[in-house]
Amino acid sequence: MRHLVVAAVALLFATSASAADIPADLQVKLQGAMLQHLDEIVVDGAYSYVDPKSQAVRTVYPANIHPMIVPFGDDYFVCSEMIDEGGDNLTADFLVREIGDTYRVVQVLIDDRPAMMAAMSKLGQ
Image (cartoon, rainbow, N blue to C red; front, side):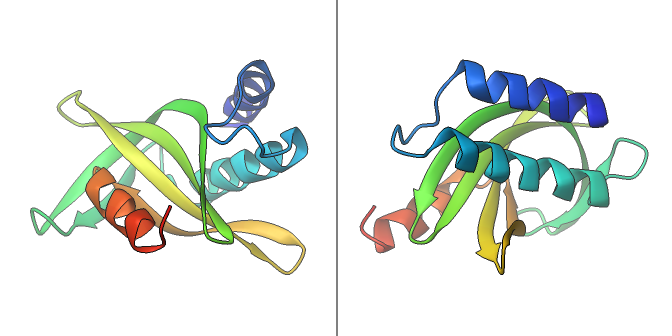
């Protein structure tokens, strides 16, 4: 997973976030928070969770770490992709918040972009 961090940071500098006004150093911190979270929760490359839509346990694998970062009030969504056991790509939106002097993932939405968009519209974003 450490090689993913290096690749993601390089990719982050090569492209810009969806909100161009996010400073590069903050982009790195936000992306790093997502990667650290993945390092902490992934077991043998897999992440299993209860999918609220299907009400079943699903297992996904980190796939494409890309630098799409979307402001959400005082927080940020850092967006990525996962692959399920059937090989299908799923969006993964990590809600990242500044806690003390560090950024941490506080929620993960997998394959639920409509929930993220609805929450953003309620904030007027």
